[in-house]
Structure formats: structure tokens, C-alpha cells
Amino acid sequence: MIGRAAQGRPWIFREILPLLLDSGEHLPSPAVEEIREVILEHLMTTIRCMAKKRCAHGRKHLGWYWRSLAGGAAFRA
Image 1: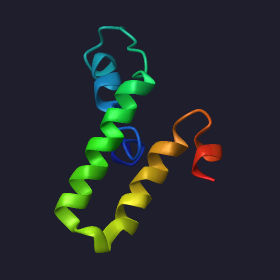
Image 2 (image 1 turned 120 degrees about the vertical axis):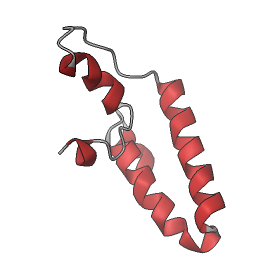
Image 3 (image 1 turned 90 degrees about the horizontal axis):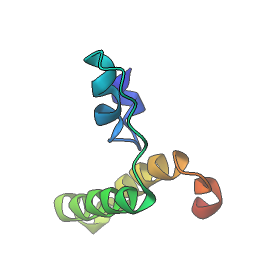
């Protein structure tokens, strides 16, 4: 189930690693600037790899990112 949780939140793996190691440390969610960089990198990689005719694929992933952000629904609309 972690795989599905990572849709739109790829940083979840670094957030749960301390829990798996029983360190008890709770890492904060990434800053909006870091999320922005991850989204842009993902989008550009999708465009390079899949060509422009597959932009729907990129939009699907962007929707997952926006869903996890505060105000994301308004931004998406």
C-alpha cells in the first residue's frame, strides 16, 4: 500500500524510513519549494520520455501532486 500512497507524494519514503528503523524521529513534510522542484522535474522527464502526444499521462500525475497540497483543488480548477 505504500506504492499507492507515493502517488503524488514520492517523498513519503524518506518520511517513513525513520519509522521503519524505530528511531522515533518524525520528519516534516517537504517545503512547497521542494515540492515544486519535484513536480517540475517529473513533468519534464515525462515530456522527454513520452513525447508531447502523451501529455494526458503527465496531467494524471500532476493531479496526484495537487491533491496532496493545501489549496491544490482550487489550483487544479
